[in-house]
Length: 466
Image 1 (cartoon, helix red, strand yellow):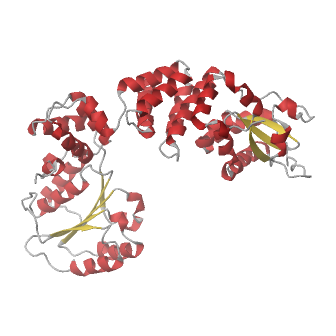
Image 2: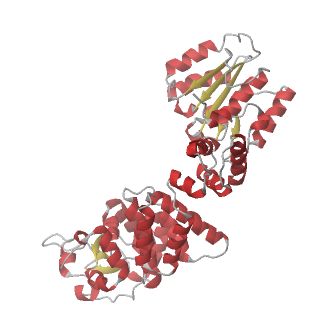
Image 3: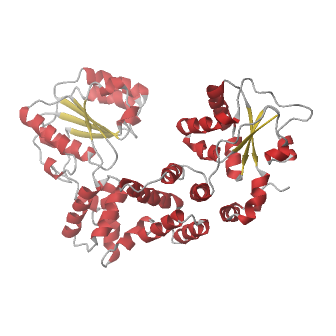
């Protein structure tokens, strides 16, 4: 059975390591001068060479040849995820006292060391404080922030960097030539970008593609990775620029029918918008869309989150929402003037009771400041607040929304509490907040294309009928 490409091309000496010259050169100098540390810490993202460099270092300090078949009694690799308990580390602490069998140094490589328990770290700490002269520890982790400072302070730390896309593509091209894999340069660029700095991932995908039996195109790579075509994303951007909600929904549907998930669409769209911004072609809407796209992957309903992120920005661009309504007179406005029906307000007030009055002096001319502060405190609710229609009614702040999605977001206790806190910071007033679907806006909806599009996504059951 053939060996995986990423194993075939795993570096066996320092000069083979790509993209980590700042580390390999330092280690070569330390070996040459004999100034070795008793403990090293290799940190950085996965697939960038931490374990490979640890193995190379272990063989170099012992002047041992390193091949894929190399097995040496004095080079011990430990997977911390499987040996994380205090008993295993106590056993290790006892064994390090034993002199090397044949080599000059006994070297322990502990991979994913952040997985150790607190008790295990305490046991390891004693060994790192007073290590035998013949022992060297190499700790590797993708999550250095989970390590106790007492451990980090007793090591020489080396931070591995993600490999740049251009350098990764060049390396992949060299592997493809050696393996006689016929692949387009654009396809290599896509693999390098998708690897996100991880050589191992990029090489693994190249290995999968090598069985195609024909010239590998950029389209082949996108199909394998589930990525949208560049032309499809350009059409989507065109719909956004044209404020065409129907075109946006149509293009999203076309992309999804090709098997592309919403998260991949959001990532590709983010990349295109960032490129646009880097070229100096930007506006406030691009920044708002980028902010919204960040939430797509974490959403429980990524498809709807992506659609709303785009549609609400088209709506807000073609029909700007006035964040600060005209100053309100001392006399409370009637429900008719608020464009929120009495039944809607009554639903949020207990029978026979009146809402608590504002415990301070809050007026709607401060609403713009509240919205801006929310952008810094919680970007996730900023968009919803920006589209809210705020009104004061009998001492209660009613937030009216056109879309039920936004109403539900602000109905969450944690979000209402956050807005109340911001209002109190701005005005000193303690307010009671309720969010409702603004019926006046819903009634207008049939003539407004963006709402029709959203209604088709969520269904009429989401809209509160009169």
